[in-house]
Amino acid sequence: MAISWFTLIFLTIYVGIGQLDALSAKIGLFSPVFGGAVTGLIMGDLKTGLVIGATLQLTTLGVATYGGATVPDFLSGSIMGTAFAILSGRGTAYGIGLAIPIGLLLTQMDILGRLTNTFFQHRADKYATEGNYKGVERMNIFGAIPWMLSRGIPVFIGLLFGSAVVKAINNWIPQWIMNGLKTAGIILPAMGIAILLRYLPIKRYFPYFIIGFVLMAYFAKTFSLLGTALLGLALAVIHVYNVMGNRKNNDNNEHHDDGGHAETEELAEVEIDV
Amino acid sequence: MSDMKLTKLTKKDVRSVFVRTWLGLQLGWNYEKMQGLGYAYAVMPALKRLYKNDKDKMKQALGLEMGFFNTTPQMAHLIVGADIALQDQLGMNDDSEKAIAGLKTGLMGPFAGVGDTVFVAIYNAIIFSITAYLCMSGQWIGLLIPPIGCCAITWVRWKLFGMGIAQGQRLATTFADSMSLFTEGASILGLTVVGGMIPSVIAYNVDLTYKVGKVTMSVQAMLDKIMPGLIPLAIAMVSYWLLGRKHMNSTRLIFVLIAVGMVLGNLQPIFGWLGGLFG
Image (cartoon, rainbow over all chains, first blue to last red):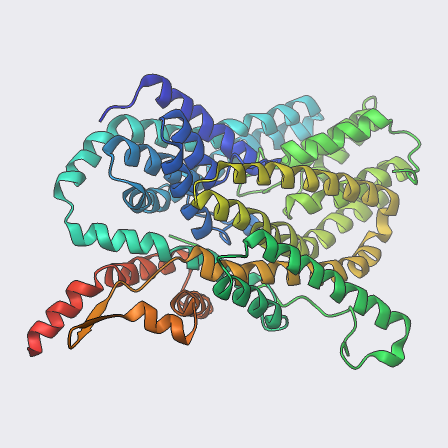
């Protein structure tokens, strides 16, 4: 139940870079599914990492930092959950069960990081009044440091000392909790879906939602989600063409009485605080 | 960006502003000015070109650009593009300062509304759900999808940046018109995928059997006869409904779902215990 120094340092650096990815290009390193996969790969059990990462990804599908709101840190959760699942050999349900409380706990580190950057902001304000543009540039780049440390430090400490704590949990945990966690891991993706539905105009376009559901519920053996996406794309393009056609000849607008000027459904507030 | 009419800024300046907006907009994110510091960093190559030898104008420009700013990062390119195009034309004086400050504060809110729907909610619904769907069954190839999506989005960002430069102040009206139809189409695609995800990723089966005479019946088999994916759909729709309640947020929903999982994961012992009470 010990983790190698190489793995420890690699994952600490990875989580810092992952956070920077979340703030900039969003290549994918920031996502829990990558966190799990990378951790699994480096610890020699890619499959466990993929499954834990993917489950957490689905759980947090709709959770995003809208307007700078703080959300649970499921990248760090995914990394630590995968690491402990592999170390203890207790499987994916256990890893997911650990990752969720870890992610929730680390919410505070995000707030701390954003707060620390206020210091650089004050320095930059001072440079701006002096016309020192190089100083302003430097302060923004320094802002990357709190972002990386706010993720790197907890992952480092968690992986270094966590295995002792996890070992204690291992000896105590009863079977019914393990069964419960396993099922919780299966149904938690419902949360990600529910949050997405809050942001999508489901009341207006529910028929498409039903089409997607029916395809995958009744034909799951012969159909895939990618196929569903392609069908969705076709339906979307048909809709757009119809609306554009109706704009041109207004005599044929029974089916789309409100043309293309419909407002997207107002964004539902999904409040996130811990 | 063929219709770009910049006179003072070079191609290199423009490219450098794009890269900085792309990668650096949120590095200095803080509770006071949010993306304000990153915004000043992003437009700095343009400011350097225009006001390097005029300290007073540089001070004025820095003060303007470091004001409070926050929007969906993908949409910021439009505003940054319009901003540097305006400064290229008008330079820095009290009038242009007012115009640009109005542009930034006026557009960041509405753009965030559209941007969060398209670039966050719909994008995640399509890209990351398919990725996770593949990875859940152990197929690492799914990991290739987000980088591909990232390339496409980066191209879109570059186009939006060019639109911002070309449109300048007319940005708000032209953009809103073309965006609404696109958002509708993307919503339809997103909803179809999300509908398909429910039965495929919430892979819960009722683990409960009962005996009628000598035959053991499975509750899940009965439920499947009514409709496959009935329980996953119910869990998802109840979660959707709960999120609309006043005192509910996503963190609390996690605890609710864990509690539900604890019950559903132990159905057989629970029913055995209940049966023991009456039997």
